[in-house]
Length: 193
Image (cartoon, rainbow, N blue to C red; front, top):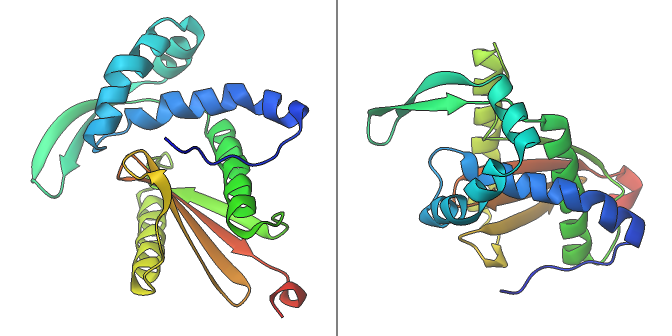
């Protein structure tokens, strides 16, 4: 497998390794992922989580049973929803977006960046969750419409798409086929000229 590698100082690289591991443990737990995620969870992640009492405690602390409706099959499934450290998750994802940007463009990202995911829900706000879902779908449709290329050597695990129009740029990460993170970059007007 060809990993994407970008230069980083030892301090930043060492500081983020625990966060990278947290991301790798949390991502394969979502519902509706591909077989690669299921295999990875059963063979590696499940074992790591079971041996990490602190992580198990943090995940089970606020866990609640939920019923999930699979719209494609019109089936209901019972599952458990648990709280993750979204600040930590979004922080490591943002660092990875900066790394991908550098890899893709060969330049440091200086634009303002915001992000949303399709694998986390905002508690108590159906309307806001629907708006996030619609925004992610619109971005996905726009990237499809312009035939934005998929980049990444193992698309069953991860690929990204990137496109820019004027001073707005989108970077979309896709993990395990269905878990997505959308980064919206707003570049300075002078930079876009």
